[in-house]
Amino acid sequence: MTVSRSSGLFSRYHAGPMPSPTTEPTTAVEKLDRCGDLSHRPRVLLGKMGLDGHDRGVKLIARALRDSGVHVIYSGLWQTPRSLAISARDEDADVIACSMMSNSHLVLVPRLIEECKKVGRPDMVINVGGIIPQEDVQTMLDAGVHKLYHTGTSMQDIVDGVREATKPYEPLNSDHVTAVLGRNLSLVHGGSEVADAPKRRPADVIGLTGSPGAGKSTLVASMAAEAVRRGEKIAVVAFDPMSPITNGALLGDRLRVDFNALDENVFYRSLAISGEDYSTLPAIIELIGGAGYDKLIVETVGAGQNETKIRDYVDRTAVVVVPGMGDAVQMDKAGILEIADVFVVNKADFAGESKLVRELLDIAAGRPIKETIATQGKGIVELLDTLFG
Ligand code: B12
Ligand SMILES: Nc1nc2c(ncn2[C@@H]2O[C@H](COP(=O)(O)OP(=O)(O)OP(=O)(O)O)[C@@H](O)[C@H]2O)c(=O)[nH]1
Ligand SMILES: [Mg+2]
Image 1 (cartoon, rainbow, N blue to C red):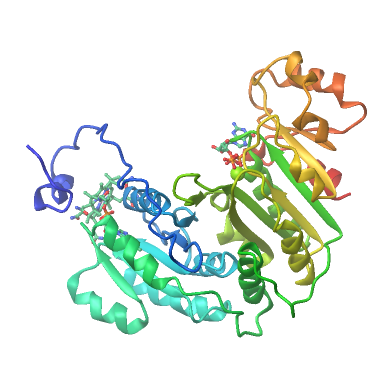
Image 2 (image 1 turned 90 degrees about the vertical axis):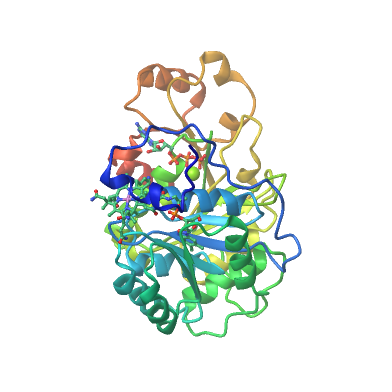
């Protein structure tokens, strides 16, 4: 028997036995650039506020948008209205797409609208989907929600909503320094000049590179939290890859940072690039410095042995390595290990850690080797001191 997701049968399963796990693929649409005709790649912030663990819908939407040429920023579960508003401002989202399944939409969505005003983006477009009773629809629209989506909405409708929200970039007419920075970064990353913004190189620009999944973003999150604890201002630019097929991207580094706790004490911007094309990075660095930041971390896309260009743009490069990825022969190969000013042995909780440190000592030639367990915040104080010392 086939049961459609929007049918009553499917929705009643909470009352009965749990369905058996499905192996059905979750890629919902054919990979096709559905946004190439727009003035820029739409930037969509997907967020889930409150105590709502239903993430299947939002993950499906993330993939469908990515596979349609959209740049999707997923900020994760359990966001507050304020942290979502800060993310939307710093990421200069074209639209916040909120998925609400926990019956808290009448409280949290109006707060989100308020917070967007407070953090300098009263113009932010907010779309809401999920379990929204019909009788609440008008209340939500009156509160300022742009569009509402119900269960069973087609992926094409969702893509169309994003396309409609994507307007050509104009310089932001605002006194809010961070909101203006967010927009200016969009402009320069899109290849436009920003003439009248303050520009200055931050005192320290650190590149953080290493293989996919080595723990770069988790390290950045821990270092940012430590910097905030010390009362320091810090900025992060995190690059993720752009699809060679659709030009879409899933910008997932931000997810590692707890903005509910850090609030706006960290400026964090996610950007998609092809390959190692860091051509817009110098302008980005200057704008971030001009907005008053002296400490900047640039996280690269997950890097291979050959990907070393980041060193040309930063003052110091930290290369993140993890146990279990090779032996002493890998250490001698030319490439990414050569560009390290600092080695970070992350996932030090994994087997093989001391062997890796021994092998690195052999090639480090005096370069510092810092051991960390990013998920536990271990070694972070020393790493921050080494990188920015
Ligand atoms: C699967 C499911 C679960 C799974 C979640 C798995 C997961 N990782 O997501 C499990 C079993 C864990 C679960 C648990 C619970 N669930 Co439940 N769950 C469902 C169910 C059956 C389907 C949701 C789903 O995944 N649909 C498939 C996805 C693809 O669709 P979707 O999420 O609706 O998204 C679509 C649209 O809504 C839209 N959309 C959604 N968001 C957005 C956002 C934007 C911007 C846009 C454009 C579009 C859009 O696009 C999507 C594609 O069409 C629904 C009932 C239903 N039929 O909706 C109940 C339901 C959501 N659950 C419900 C409840 C109450 C719970 C629990 C509290 C139950 C309990 N007492 O323990 C817990 C809470 C869990 C938690 N931590 O929050 C209620 C919510 C009631 C309400 N809001 O008033 C529902 C409606 C069931 C019911 N009829 O009572 N649940
Ligand atoms: N056990 C353990 N897991 C870690 C550690 N640091 C990070 N992780 C986990 O490793 C996974 C990848 O972490 P990320 O921080 O996203 O890695 P990344 O290098 O930024 O990944 P990309 O940006 O995709 O290249 C996550 O599941 C983290 O929780 C660590 O020190 N120990
Ligand atoms: Mg990362």
